[in-house]
Image (tube, rainbow, N blue to C red):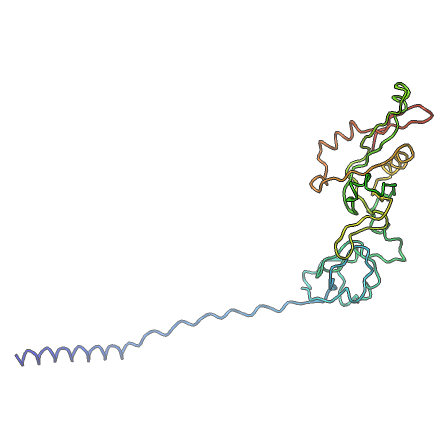
Length: 266
């Protein structure tokens, strides 16, 4: 029995010794090196002028309204003001449109007072600004909620001379003479106040019209009373069907020396 145990112990020792020899003679493979990402190339940056805070339309810019911000030189849009131009390019100019905080200042959004009035600066090319009288109590301005940059329809209310003579009583007619025109200003207000409050304190509304529309509105104001009808933001772009209806049906009746004459609306 002892001989058998000694034989098993000898075999175990031999197997252990053999395993140790094999482990020493065949070392484990070295770990593969971890690839190191190459550093990203440094971008060429330049400083551009941005709004330090929200700038409303019509505000005269000062150094406190502006700050410099780094911008990739390869992605620099045209019209931005860089450090090479200097901040004095923008200081003292008037904002033709509102600018958000952190938004780059573009040259085309600025105008100098010596180059003309503010309203003429914000008026698009080919358009005219026409002021019409409105009811300050709100009946002609959707209860006082028509504000600058809103879209409105213009309604003319006038006395129908032919119907009045036939019925021997005053007959008044209302019809839409213009659709989807932009309000430039109400009184002297061209935008909301700094707190975002909306208010109307004027008795005139300045509309953005084409030259032909300006002629019709001026004549309609002499022959009747004009009212503004506020449009929904969803209707800011009239559909093709609505435009076709305007071309076919809209007209302005002008009475001269007791003779009515219908003229198409441009």
